[in-house]
Image (cartoon, rainbow, N blue to C red; front, top):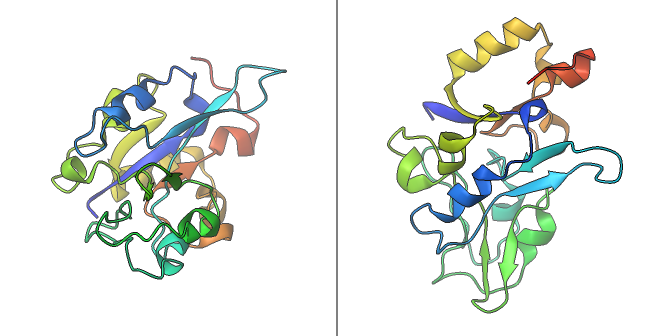
Length: 185
């Protein structure tokens, strides 16, 4: 994978432009495949995007008895194939992040596929192409490494998903949170 989705969660302002863009991606049938979570709505306005982290060895695919969840050569974990999905919902239970959703009308699982029609050609996923605060970015590994050095955060604290599902193709950073730094927008 030449480029990866990179998330700087502390930048999220809850505008939800990523959600609107997601519905416009080819093949999504105007379905939103990402989410914006209100962290503590009774206390503050902090939000964060939630989306598939495209695990290298995804629990959703491992749990699928019909092999309906395929992994693209770029590392993107795709939604269930219509012709193979049997509607067992094992994938929705197996995902440690709670990302796959099940459409009971279509009897089919759907989730973020990194806008594979775009990202396979190096074009940013829709969510990253519209994010006004750079919460969602489409970067090379070298660009991500430069950001990591800028914040001087150890590698084991850089990717938050490392303890749940080992390696993921999406990188998530929390340097401001880990170092107690508050960003001003």
